[in-house]
Length: 477
Image (spheres, rainbow, N blue to C red):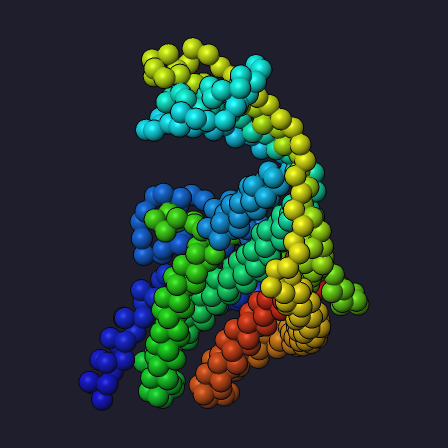
């Protein structure tokens, strides 16, 4: 018996540091469904609770500030923004063919052997000599410049019509990344807050259990209760302390996940803060809104792909049309037998004209390309139908989850109030010797379960609201 008492006393001593670090309040600070008349509650926990780094330790970020930070530093979003610039540069390259094209060229020739009986030639800018003149020179240099201007070209016309669609496609990819970040960061942020609130609840639970352990110990020493009451109080306190330790460990990787989504520097730390009243107000959403597919970024993207495919079909339909361009050439001819005097006399010549090309037979490639483009157009149409079904399923599921979680939150809020009242009454009855300590344990277990369940329901409701907004296409940045 003495050994058992000593063991229980040592367990009590081990629980004292946990009790000293816990909160002194006997009721959890749970946000009800209706906004309470309380001041702003700020929850502050460092990114690395076990670290002591000073970089960024003074930052307190709300959910909106976390999202704003991600919009500036998230690698995936910055890559998407770069892709928009790449799309602009690609369009500029493809459309450059509409501008005049100028090329300079030149030929420097040294004849190793010339014909002495050449026919009559005409010197550029001179008259017919009746004898070979330029053909007898051993050194010739002919520089020139050629300028061309496209008048009509099916490929350039396709590039012109598809350029804004390619830019729109890149911008929509950026918007899709932003929507993903807003929803993912919100969920991750709520997940961190859920764990932090659970830590607060477990601290309060540990405080209550520590008080019960002290009361049971004094009652046991006074011979009022049996030794098993004291043992059960110690066991329950140890279990609560273990849950508190586990929750403190779980919050570290959750913070790491939030940092990854934000693009936050791993070496720095930050704290999270939230307004309880604003959070409670944020759980509401108008569930009577009708689903509009056009608001979903995925639907907008598939419409853009469909428009691009239509342009490709039109291109293959018109690819048999001729290409037409204008050109202007200007050349200078230098001839001399002595290389040192080659540039002494120039014979200029220039010309202007039109050039066209008609594809007569291409091995049926144009017909096959047109057929392929039409088939790909049909694939996109089926993708559009499949996407509508998927969006409708996501919306229906998100709406059902939101309504269920909202109803569940209201019931669990009542459970918390009743569990607190039951625990208070049972504790008084136990102190008066009316009920056994087992009733206190049961009431305490019901209280902590109802509080944790309420917190889970609250943050599940917030998460389901994010899913519903995403399904309706209401998330924008």
